[in-house]
Amino acid sequence: MTVSNGLAAWHKQGKTTEFRGHRIFYQDSGVGGEVILLIHGFPTAGWDWHYVWQALKNDYRLISIDMLGFGFSDKPADFQFSIHAQADLIESVLTELGIQEAHILAHDYGDTVAQELAARHLDPESERLQILTMTLLNGGLFPEQHRARMIQKLLVSPVGPLLSKFASRRTFEKNLNAVFGEHTKLTSPEANDLWHLFSRNDGHRKSHIMLHYIADRRKHRERWVGALQKLDVPLLLIDGTADPVSGGYMADHYESLIPQPNVVRLSGIGHYPQLEAPQAVLEHFISFIGSNKNI
Image (cartoon, rainbow, N blue to C red; front, side, top):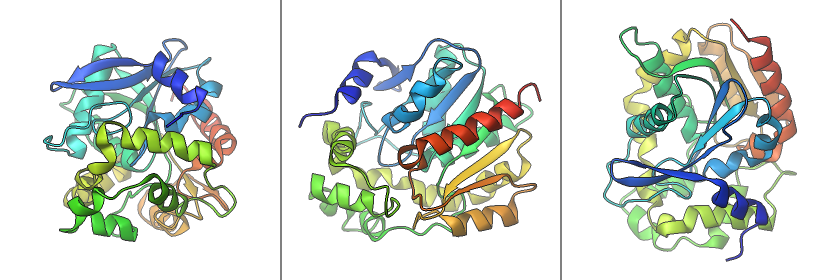
C-alpha cells in the first residue's frame, strides 16, 4: 500500500530506541525551548500529531512516542500490555533524552497514560516526570462515562481473537469514521496512512490485545480520576462534542468532577480534534500554555 509522502518522511526522520527488549519508534524535534510531550491514542500512533507538529516545532521541543503495540514500534503478541507499562516506556525514553519536565498534550488512550503520569507526578517521593501543564483531548477519562463502540465490545469478548483475524482496510476506515464529525471524516489518503500504521507488523491481528485499557480504567479509576482532581498544575480539556465515545456528555461529567474546570468545546468535531480541527486545537493549546508560563 502506498503511503503519503508526509508519513514516509515522518518515518525516515524518526528515531528508535529499546524498551524491555522491544524496538520503539519516536520523534524528537530536537530544537526549541520547553518540551511538549504528545501522547497518541488507540488505534493510531504519533502521526496523529503531524498537523500540529509543524506549527509547534519552532518554539518548543516536541517529543512523540509510538507506544508499544502501535504505529512503527514493535507489536509483540506476548507482552503484558498495561497503561502502567506504557507510562514506564514514556519515562524510559524521556530519561534517555535527559528530559525531566514537560507540557503534556494527550488524546484517547494517551489521556489514560497521562493520568498515570499525573498520579506519579503527585507522589512526593517520586522523581518522575514533572508536568508543567496538561491538555487532554477526547478520551475515556471516566470509565462510568465511556461509551464503548460495538467493535470494542466484541474485541474484548471471547470472539475478539477471531474477529481480529478478519480486520480489513475497509472496516477500519468505516469504524474510525464513525467517531469523526459529520463534516470532518477522514479522506481516503488519510485513512490509508492510519491503516498502514495500524496494520504494520500485523497490528490489525492483535487489536483485541490492546483493548486492555478498558479494564485498566475500571480497575484504577480512583487513582486516575483522583490524579485529575488533585493535579497541581494547569489542566485543560479540549473536547470534540460530536464524538459518540467521549463527546459533550463526557465534558459535562468532567465539569461536575474536576475543580475549577477549564473546558473548550469544539462543536461538530468528533473523537479526533487534532485531525479534524487542528487549527482550533492549536489556538486553544498555544493560548493555554502561553498564559501559564512561569506559574
